[in-house]
Length: 378
Image (tube, rainbow, N blue to C red; front, side, top):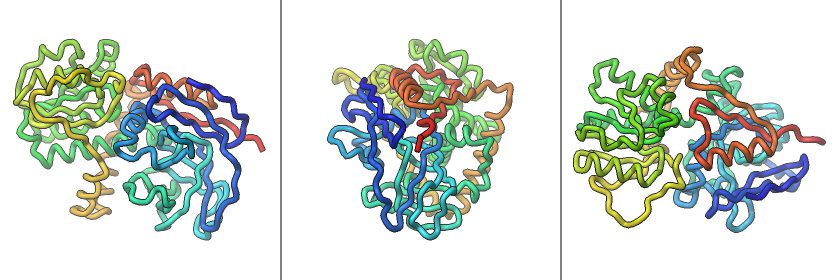
């Protein structure tokens, strides 16, 4: 770990792409804004275990391409956040407008807006060409019917992860759950996992028979049990106590030991195995022992989103997403749910502390971290 003080100017949090535990703050130069470009201040962003996954699979899925650092071997992990236009040389975008979208861990972002509409724009910068549209689109908050200022923490912490959960649930329903009786989640305390379990619990209420099993650490067992969305909560060490039956496995942990234990337990009764996240990224598989059952497949949301948008039409897909989002946030807002405590942090030390904790798997599951770079002088 390196901690480099850079003053109060433009800053970027950079990490070694091949060694995520090495990071530093870099000063960014102030440059002239080209014609048609816009500069946004990165007001606040969420940092969760999902962002660690962006770094772990950054080379394989191109996440490092979104916000190049200009330094060989170094990258900037993307985050979901809100930004405000501070400079604009685009006739359709005004200073002061606010947008939700994909940002660097930096206090400034420059974009070349294209496909500008009343609801937002797409960054047309050359280095982002060919990347999925869901990562390149910036939504204007004043045109978003689901946006309210008080809901910003929920939007930051849950909206991207809940989108993943929505498409996992949709995928499973379309596949008739692969004929399985149970859906098993590793890292059941992760927001993506329990968001999916919430959706599946809604399906069960409407008659679906599939059950949900949450795998978690001993320290997180009480929290996961208290969520009330899993039929069964099991510590990692007790995986072998599960009854073997037709099941599907969604891995949000990325722990080789957990994946092996699940595949050994269910074997050929495991109908599908999907990799979604890497909360335990530093516990990768060691050795060459083959996995019993199906080979794990990466679950990639943009592909499914594009498929469903073409089948249903963008408006109907957004309507379904919006309805599901409203039902979910009502549960999160419930004061008695205990699902979320928002923790705000400002400045470099807070960013470094949360990043290091996430990397070590040390974030408390009930906490949601919202960060910013602090005030910029001048």
